[in-house]
Length: 97
Image 1 (cartoon, rainbow, N blue to C red):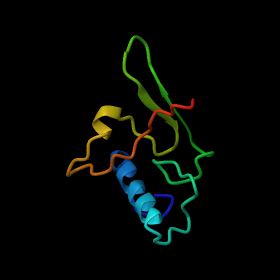
Image 2 (cartoon, one colour):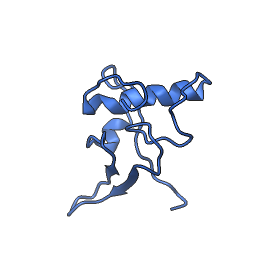
Image 3 (cartoon, one colour):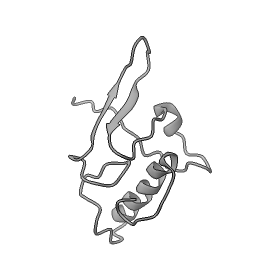
Image 4 (tube, rainbow, N blue to C red):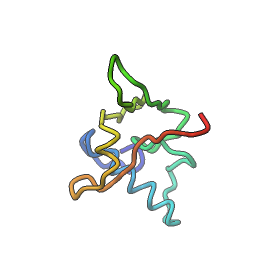
């Protein structure tokens, strides 16, 4: 983790970074967390470009990030909290874009 140095698998890093983001939202000091952090690594959102795209003939959108911690996931599955993956931290559609 770029924020605290803990080691996590790529699949669990999104959940871990979500913990940092939630703590900051609750006014717990997170000195290294930027104002608009990447949801996968916690660094500045300008360091990691993110987008939703359709690949090939697929009818569903897939997340893509230019981030060293990006781990491909399903948007539908990420929207549901589970005991092994409690975070619903994921890319969302912007109605303005």
